[in-house]
Image (cartoon, rainbow, N blue to C red; front, top):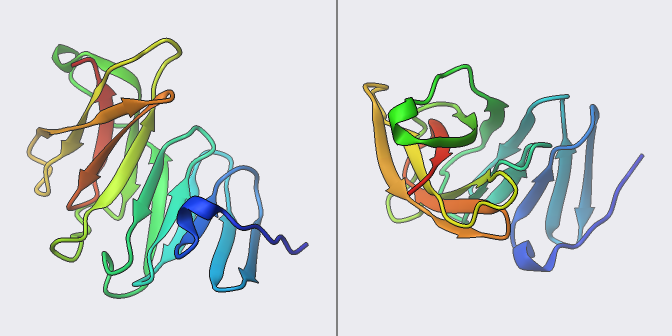
Length: 161
């Protein structure tokens, strides 16, 4: 089955949506739309032209054009990592893989984490590149999620500010 879609906010990007258990790819006039899913993960190959990937649970990552120099297999998965309770975590901890994927300088990716119903403010913690701990990377809350720009991939969770 072929699917055609145009998402105005990301017209110049590849859009990846996770929501089932199959894989589809189509060309929509310059915007490549790839729908690839497994029951709990979002998986896609994203390259230099940029793109976005979302898990069925609402976690997501968007790459602007130029953030990646070559095609990369990107995955969003529920993490087994335990977020420190002292950091007041909200919701699930998410792996943005491959861990420690460094982005082209000056082209950060934006990660998005879903927030529990009624949460109006949150920040994001991201694992350090060397996995030695967590860094508070900020975040802006809007419409049930928190978003923040990052320079590398890793494990992230939302927390109360």
